[in-house]
Length: 437
Image 1: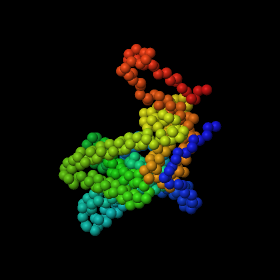
Image 2: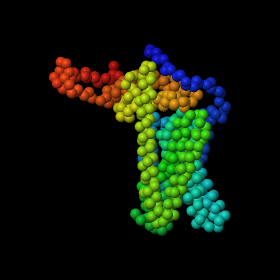
Image 3: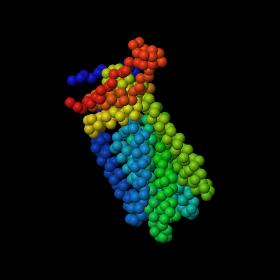
Image 4: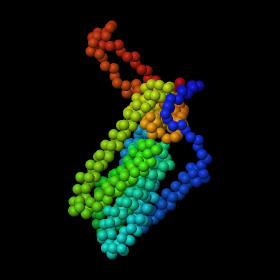
């Protein structure tokens, strides 16, 4: 049996601390049970409220139309998270929180605040305007931000940077928009049923075009600003307490401001909505998309920079830092393992890539002085996870390294023993299959 290589030197890194025994309310099953119960109850209540406002037929129509952009948005956020993919349970929690808890908070709080303002001012139209442009952005963005805060606090290992904040915030907002779209589309369908309007000129068609075709990214775009604030806070050292509080608050305020501008676009004239959409929303969407993709490329650079230290110590094979820093090579390694070893082998390679990426990010935080007190324990845990999967992963990663290596270029000068412009041919790599006996 192969022995583990020695651990790399950690001069200057914080040492681990002893873990204290958790109280009963801190146990995992208690927290998960309470959270699941809360989300289930919220879902049942929001279902009843939406169905009451739309009717059964309107609810079903709204549900069928509102679900259309959800797979596209979730897939897009999952694609952004491919460098260090977080667990699915975080995404499921985020979507459920947005669709159930955040939507319930928004419906109840917005209705209460709007009625109170209408009673206090005796001006229902003014109350509706204030509710849409002031109350709704504050309530809705705060409710969605709660999911990001919970993941940031209780799933800290899965929340390491900007991309994680963007993904959690975006999926939460996708869930929220899903429920809100059911309400708006179902209500529009009920209006059409009363008026007898059908076809392309109906209220349902107009609502579907605006909310599902033109702006499915609106709510995710707002809340992503909050996620970026939490992501930058996650990159800060634990000792920077003020920064770790102010950055998420700044992101939340920006999200509220963008949401308020979007909701208040109708006050800018007949074409105010289209002006805000073209001049403000689309450029912001493009800028944030560029920022997230650029951040993902920086993460791949961090992998290529930090992992050679572990290759030198014997934990990784020599070409693995290059392979793990290339999305194309990582995909080829998973496909190779799946082809010759089945789904279990492909899953082992995917887990190997994920653990190696987490290890690179951990070491980067350590070298930057931003590692937590559990640095050593976490590093050893990740190294052992890699070591346990090396038998399946290393041949697949070696194949990906060979397949993506640049082709040799003939030098412009003669080589001894070969005609001008020709060189000795590299030996052909055999089609290695680690799973064949």
